[in-house]
Amino acid sequence: MASMLPSTNAQSVYCGGFQPATQRPYIPVAGTIVTTLDGDIVQLQPRGWMLVPAFGTTANRPATNNLAAGTMYVDTTLSITVIWDGANWRNVTSGAVA
Image (tube, rainbow, N blue to C red):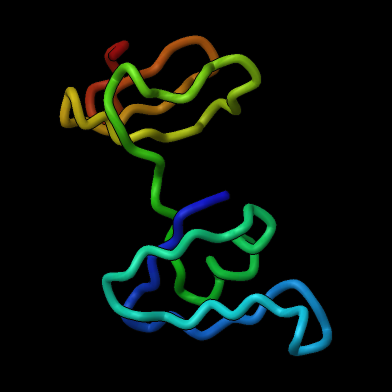
């Protein structure tokens, strides 16, 4: 699952099937974060939708086993955004281990 936020020029997108009954509609509403299936990200991003990184406390950071390098997390304990480099969480601004 992923969180997406529509930009001001985001388009409506229908994912997941050829028949209307099987499609998942994503209708942009300004300021509203929408939970999507991971596979729908590739259809939403080119149409003006932005991926919202996961967020939470330092203690609730995602488990790092099998975590893809480049995964971002907004750490609300430290009030910074960190990125997993494959070995450490790093502050995206300074590059320091966080």
